[in-house]
Length: 304
Image 1: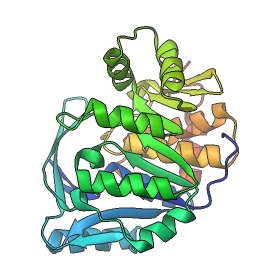
Image 2: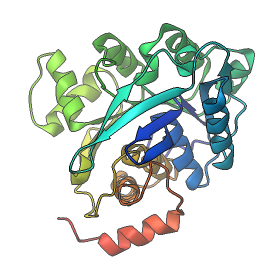
Image 3: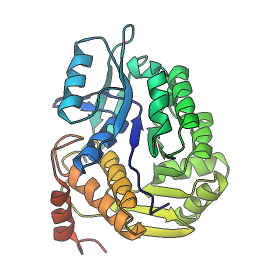
Image 4: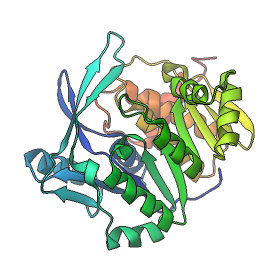
């Protein structure tokens, strides 16, 4: 699977406004992933919904300026565009207050989505958008109609951290990305203990998920693939804020694996993207892949 070439990538889920202490910024993990893929020359499709309101129009304009195709961004007449209150602690780590119901809680399946599903090579989705039955139903039908691979971005944000939904999606996915705390929590649901490598292997085998990626914040990440555990310690940077860093990491990992890079190189590049974005303002700063490569070259050897 590390050699897979993903020609058509779909990012499914929330688009929203992050209400930061310094002001509002466009956000939502699937949207962030889509934009970071676009930064790498990939042309993903974004499936989501905004409200028929000023905030939705403004968000749609931002998506268009970011180069994303708006064909599958639905407009909801009843529900508002999503807003999330973001709180940053003294170390610039983010916590989130997520409002509901909002437009992306009501993503509807259409014939056009069916046509897109039939040609999709990879669908990227998270657990947050599955909090509502209409959107969950649409995703499940899309996955059923798609011959492509599935990449689950686990996002356990209380109260939207249903064990039932998370486990259902883990059984359906080919790739799973989660942080070290989420890995321990999911293993705890099943009474499983062990070190990170043991838990990643357990998750892969128990849920029949071939590739498991575990992120560690500033301490890098690990990749369990083909029964081998790869690790990268990350790169030392001065964090400006961490909003979107994990999403950029995911995009970098997809780019690396799709290009046929070794797991080690794909993991290194993903860590480099995440560290670079954490050193910038906003979840989706402007950059080119060469900027990340320069940062990796500059910081190589800074962690051991």
